[in-house]
Length: 352
Image (cartoon, one colour):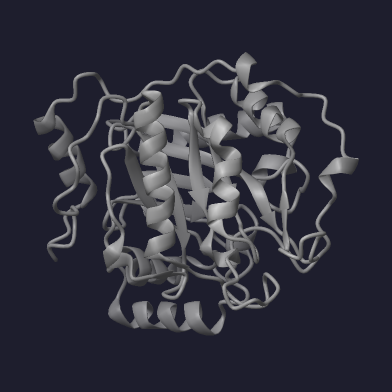
């Protein structure tokens, strides 16, 4: 962990420069109208291969507990590993694999690597990252993933005044098609609600979340409970919002006899998640708190310490930016070896 002075510098930067420390899209610009786009890689959900690999069945509790303990990475504060975790269910991905995900949207080259490059080129680049992680942590298999923004915060009101754009099914289907190009790749559907509510957005994705290889991401940065336009300030979700999503996923898993869902919650400021101690855990859902901010390594480590390490939920993630992490000195994106020094050890890695 970085020196105490750096930690306070990181905290100060995370607060005072939060306007620059955003995670993905630029809602101040007009969002492209999906209805005016065409997509040559359409597929229906019925056509998608639903196979995926995860933990062996049945799960050995001793092995599971050892893997969870190892993720504490030598922490001696007592925070990690998280106590009283639910018993794991067969098919659980975590902590048996580290997820390495590419994030973005097919309509924009500015939202992330998913969308910036053509699919084959993007997947070839992902293969390189996967090999880096396999080399850095040979004992931990890597689970490749695509993390797609299915509901995008917008700089314009839209017809219902909610400042968000729902991506059409044909584009979600296209992402599933791309995922089929790699064996056992999983997909995350990410939600930026704008001035909408998570209760109005999540159910619209249910048919996709019923697929065993499709999981969920939630972006509090663009949850504008203050009624302001997205990107004018950092948004927020409460533990009750997170619990709504995890309850929804848990029921979906039980009702459809699915393997557990992985649920990614982005965070890089204190206010982005309120009352985190009230977040409830379920055996059907594996929650990952993902440090989602960009900046120089000291800033990212400081944010991870204050907003992820100090407020344990279950598992942790860390986001790396191909472009934004290089903007300030030392103009360096952290390597897998550097990320692996963090306490706790991130089990979910996202590239934008």
